[in-house]
Image (cartoon, rainbow, N blue to C red; front, side, top):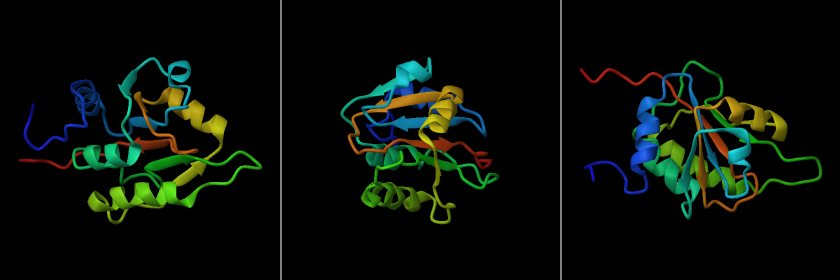
Length: 145
């Protein structure tokens, strides 16, 4: 156990976050997401909600400030409706460490899957909210010297 690191972050997840470079992406996937089908690097976070993981990850993780949208979510399939409370719940957590973050970009389901294939890793959570998946693009970590 380490001081200052949330108990929600497993040793495996902490190692993944540390190994990611700027521009790498990580998917926080809901429980229904086909993670095993789209990526070979899967981290299990069963039972955890994505908003809670955002609270745990973002104090350790710099979002990319060189892109228009460091946060990406899936757009609804035609005929479906989004629950705006899901994005608002995530943003409430994100704004704690990133108050000036650009708006979340929405991309189609299959574009999201393709982006997930290229991501550094997929974290499979216990999130059950429909369209609850989110991609975080890592930025340059400020110098600590």
